[in-house]
Length: 323
Ligand SMILES: Cc1cc2nc3c(=O)[nH]c(=O)nc-3n(C[C@H](O)[C@H](O)[C@H](O)COP(=O)(O)O)c2cc1C
Image (cartoon, rainbow, N blue to C red; front, side, top):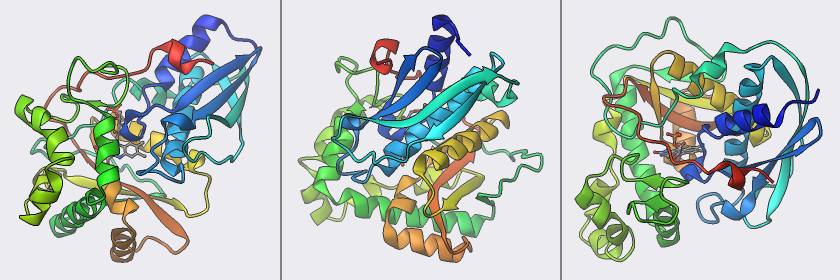
């Protein structure tokens, strides 16, 4: 089925609203007649934070699901064929999926593409209404001692990961703390999205690079990396797990639906990637929460009602996303 260039571009823009690691936005689209292809630009991959390209593939999977939903809003169904190619950094463009289009039904979840966002601050002190929301691949953690345990383990894992200077440098590289940064508004994470004050934004690059070793010597870095206080304001932490050998793009599609379902309940999410990235806390969390054998904790996500407006999104313009 042939779609107009206008609809194609509208759908690409909406798909681009999906969450991606460090807001790298690795997804690129190619249109060849009535066939669409999704590529991963591994040149924006995180060589330190994501050396295998798993987060890049997951991010592309989230964009893919968003594309399928955006197309559905135009009564277009997409049949997806995944390639299962390696998305490790530094290989240029690699194909992730091919889509063939036909007539189809609308999936109402597409309405949440604009409402979903990452909220990196405290959540409102109010009970959340989940209206019986459950997922087979997600454990929802409500009880306070368990959330406190996750908050503490997340801080531990973040601090462990942040000990690596190259990780911190890469993180700073994706920060757009100065509004004059040439990529501000296009990708990466800005001051507003990270909920930093002006002085925090000014100090962050120095603290994360030059001063970290000395602060670490004086045991000051643990509290610098700590999110526990804000984490504890989240009334529900979702432990999202999938088959350990699943193609990460498939996990990413499910991840996108999870985030959109939460958005439909008025909830914003704040990932705790460190908890699943650190081998020790991954194992401890799986054990404590009985994540079944053969499953991998893909991500733990704090959910709650945000206490403010969504920060303005930084997104790549169409010409960077289309090939
Ligand atoms: C695989 C993956 C891991 C992420 N890890 C974190 C994280 O540990 N902490 C965080 O604050 N945001 C994390 N994010 C959220 C992204 O930074 C966020 O999606 C991106 O900056 C775009 O912002 P938006 O979600 O508000 O559109 C992660 C996203 C993905 C897809």
